[in-house]
Image 1 (cartoon, rainbow, N blue to C red):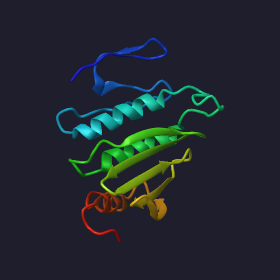
Image 2: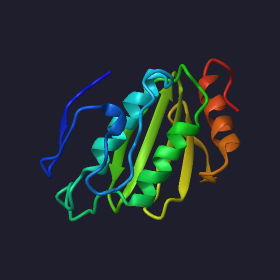
Image 3: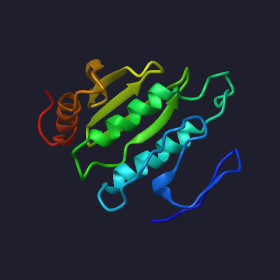
Image 4: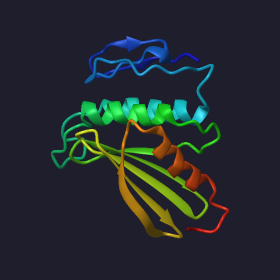
Length: 157
C-alpha cells in the first residue's frame, strides 16, 4: 500500500509505513501485511489528528500532546482483536484524544488525556455503566474492556 501525504511543512512521504507527524519526531509505522484493516485506518486517523494546529477548534485549544498521541498509538497497537470495527478517533479540546467503538447496544470510549493517562466509559443501551482509569501499559485491562464490547449480543452486566 502506498500513498502520498503532503504536510503543512511541504514535506512529502511516499510510503505510508514511514509517516511522521509534524509535531512529533517519531514514526507511526504501519505493518500493511500484518495489521488488521481497522488498525491501519485508526493509525492513519491518529496521524492526521497529530497534525492539528493550535486553535484547531477555534476556541484556542492546543493540538493533542505528544503523550496523548504516544499512548493512543500504544493502545491501538496492543489490541489483539482482528475483527473490530474501526473506532472513531477524535481530538479533545485541551490536548487529548478520544477513541470510540460501538457494537449494537454497547459503546466503549477511551479518553487519552494530555498527560497520557487514560480514562474509559462503558455505555450500554445509551446508559453509562462503568467508568474508570486504564493503565496504558496493561494490555489485559484493555483486552477485558474490548471483550465486554464485542460480546454485545449477551445480556448487559
